[in-house]
Image (tube, rainbow, N blue to C red; front, top):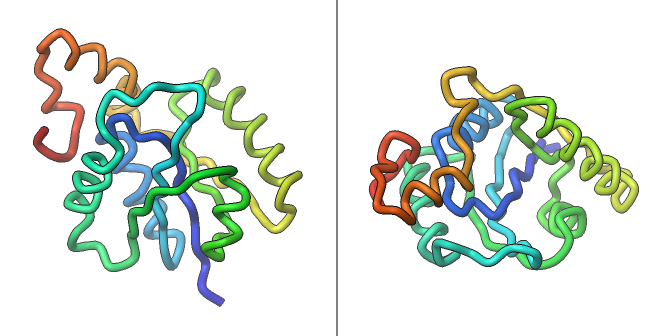
Length: 150
């Protein structure tokens, strides 16, 4: 049976840190689906269709990586695409505290779903979407943080 991992997030924007987790996950799973979700508690900075296009361009030569937009609960979306795993990256202990709670809820909602955490590559651990948005908002140069041109 094909092992599919879902890498969910708002990806606003998708950073080199995200790219690193996806590429490493693609070596562990038969397929990685990057699921761009709409977080109801967040207002997007970059349009979701723009991010979809940029992320698809980033992985155009990777046959086992797909990019999709989804609505609703991550656990339900994972089930609908046949994903047995959620893939997440951890930069620090704060990320762990947050992600651990979400992993437990996802497993409660879908007991066939396991979360796999990958520790972010140290050289990329300081990058966060919120920092990139703030730099971009004030016309700073964000090229070093993103795997694609804006």
